[in-house]
Each structure stands twice: as C-alpha cells, then as structure tokens.
Image (cartoon, rainbow, N blue to C red; front, side, top):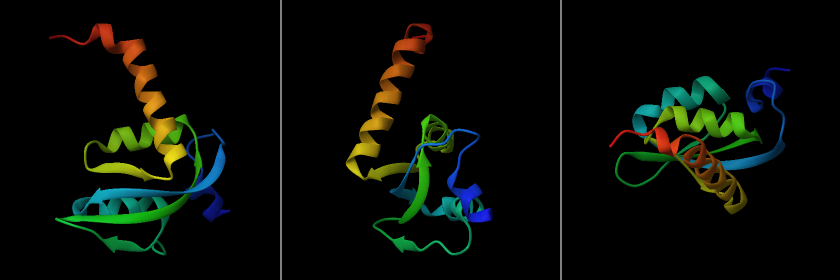
Length: 101
C-alpha cells in the first residue's frame, strides 16, 4: 500500500509510467521524502542528479513538479514531457492575461 501511495498524487489516478526527473542536488531530500529511500539518485552535471521514478502521470503530478520550481525538470519519456507542456499551455491560456507586466 505504501508503494502505491507514493506513486499516486492526490486522488487522481493516471497511467503508471517511469518518469525521469533532473533535479538540483538540494532537492534530494524532497525526492526521497516523496518516493522513498529505495530510489536511485544518479549524479549528473553541475550540481544535478537524475532520478527515475514510477508515478501515476496526472495533472496532480504536473502540479507537484510545478510547485518544486526551477530546480526540477521532467526529461523523459517524451510523452510525459509533452503532457506537461500541454498543461503549461492550458495554464497560460487560463491565467496568462492576469499576469502583471
């Protein structure tokens, strides 16, 4: 049950996929807190690591990544990156006119 809960984001299910996330090193604790101690953090260039995690891909997952900020980026698979890009486009349409100059 714990493993299942770590893959889900809120009550929103989605297709379970292994997602590759590139993160700044200071986010290691965030990833471990969310996905557990058994994840593998692979060192990457200049103060970054890459982690592969199994998640139920949903708008809630996208929102979680957005909330982390610039320090985390989904880099694969391509279809998940495209889903996040579509969510960014939707948010821009929905809220873009309300952004002050």
